[in-house]
Amino acid sequence: MKSFLTALFLFVSVPALASGHQCPTEQQRGRLTAFRDQLAAAESPEAARDMALSQTRLDHVAIHKAAAFLKDADLQSEDQRLTVFEDGIRNSSTQAEVAGQFDKLMGDHLLRGCLYDPVEIVLIVVGFVLGIIPGIVLLFLFC
Image (cartoon, rainbow, N blue to C red; front, side, top):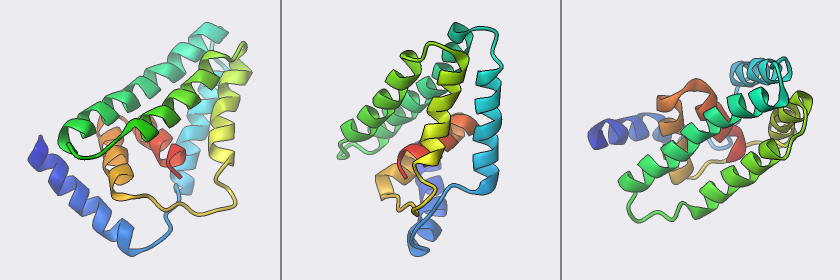
């Protein structure tokens, strides 16, 4: 697993770091928008929260797995940012409010580019290994 992550990190991070500011693509924004629409159409607020949190739990797994790989990295800041995002989901009382958390996540980055540090790139890559939505959430969260 470590060899795979090292190769994946180098494959993704070298071009990303060389090109400067990075942003989630329109395709990634579209995937997250489609997920947001699923949340808004969920049967109940509880179902919307469960659907959203099932994806962010995978982001916590990504952070935990990366911590084992990046032994010297302090990932508390990244974990805290994810927890704050999840708190917004947990405190939402309607499906629209749950979906709105993803609108807010995507909207916060419309006017600026993103510059990911190497640790964030590893976390994003591991997020994508675990699933499309977890990877995209980390792209926006760390932007």
